[in-house]
Amino acid sequence: METVKELLIILISSSLVSNVVLSQFLGLCPFLGVSKKTNTAVGMGVAVIFVITLASAVAGAMYQFILVPLGIEYLQTICFILVIAALVQFVEMFLRKAIPSLYEALGVYLPLITTNCAVLGVALTNVQKEYGILAGVVNGFATATGFTISIIILAGIREKIQYNDVPESFKGMPIVLLTAGLMAIAFCGFSGLL
Amino acid sequence: MAGNSKALERLVNGIIKENPTFVLTLGMCPTLAVTTSAVNGLGMGLTTAAVLALSNMIISLMRKIIPNKVRIPAFIVIIASFVTVVQLLLQAYLPSLNDALGVYIPLIVVNCIILGRAESYSYFNPPIPSLFDGIGMGLGFSVALTLIGGFRELLGVGEVFGYRVMPESFTPIGIFVLAPGAFFVLATLTAIQNYIKIRGAKMGKDTSKIGSGCSEDCMNCGEKGCSKRFYDNTEEGKEEN
Image 1 (cartoon, rainbow over the protein chains, first blue to last red):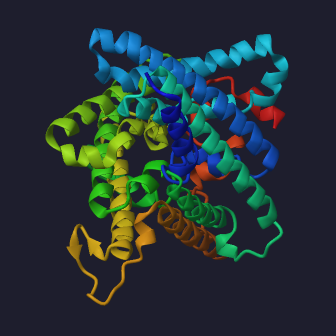
Image 2 (image 1 turned 120 degrees about the vertical axis):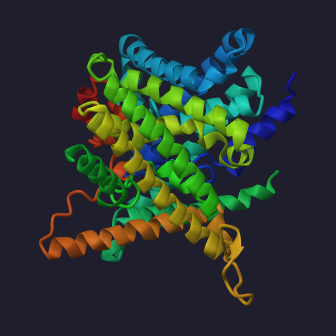
């Protein structure tokens, strides 16, 4: 059984030390594409936390109870991507019917996450590191929290950059990437935590 | 022969005219993550090229059978199958490369270059041109990744393909092989792209092909192969924005 201490270590290492965007480059597209304003960044972050936590639970359960007993672990990539896609579709339908207010807030972001590499990446990492279902869910939640923290910080910085005089060639993406690079350097500092 | 020139045209198109990394700026996650050395870049590029060429051909062969409504899930299953095949082959014959690339090999499934080519080319064209389109695009991706990897290796370690090329007095700039270096290299790359675009526009050239890929605006993404297009009912989301 996993102890609380181990889970805590997973929590810190996945959210801060090996941040999903800034050190593993997963989920880069929404990180750069939805970070123009802080409030959309928050919405995206919450949707990502929701989907990744749920997806790592479902993918973990499927791996443990279906793929391993049948001895077809090598089909994990195909199964995970299909399950995640179906799950996001299902969550969208469920939210629209059951909790319209939450759907209003997250609905726009859900389709963007379907084949987001971070979701599949977390499911695969859980298998690779041989996490159980509980540790997998914690890892998923922590990874998504790391994503949310960094996208909100980036959105905050981008709102300020708008008022700065950026060289013409660096307008748009280049300056955002430079900012992300500097953030990555700052996040390197967390490696002393563990 | 007409067939030959068509195939050649697709190859040149993929490597130079529509280079997925330098011109279209697609598939940035693996580009940043695995280009810590020229060898890793080349390995990732060729792996992606193999998957791209094979899945392009099979999708093209099956284009009349796959119903339009479920085409994207069907594409993903085909792509994921080839990724699994390639991954098993790498595990068996090139374990060191497999370890170096790690989780990024199965993640080829969600690389938007592959889904993008399926959506915009192989679903509408016969198998042979599609195969060459895949090879061309894959080679273009490989060239780009090898160049970026070589550049980062040169500055970060002072070597290229593991051979020392910088003089002894050169102090390696270690940050270039770490995560932040990847962002800086890509920032410079997109800045150069912007510069060419601005200069081209001043001289009245058509620069509309030079894309910004996923990196511009996710919410209104019109890019073929973007994950948002997994559904056909995405128009509702657009209006709200």
